[in-house]
Length: 113
Ligand SMILES: [Zn+2]
Image 1 (tube, protein in one colour):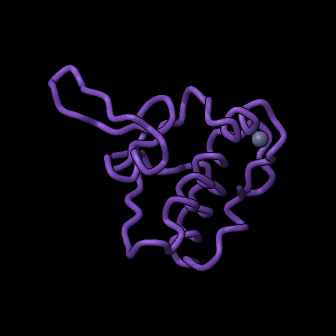
Image 2 (cartoon, rainbow, N blue to C red; image 1 turned 135 degrees about the vertical axis):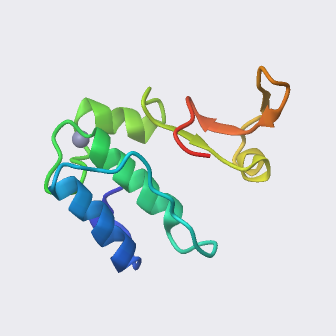
């Protein structure tokens, strides 16, 4: 999934693309908006671009080892934390954190909450 393939969200995507082009991405981005407008796709595509070893412009190459790991959902540097109901709907089981709170996971480690 490439940033250039995300439909709509022109303004948000331009911020993300510009950060890639100038080599200075912020430490965090908050994608907020109604459901089903492409926030998750944009976030995953942006993460792929950041982690890609052979990025083409602002898009991940889709072929390097990092891209392959992202595609398989096993990249060590990308974790997605979802609300519990969404994680369960996607087949993940909530886990109990060391503080006893339940937290749903999809992927290996959290990068967003
Ligand atoms: Zn790549």
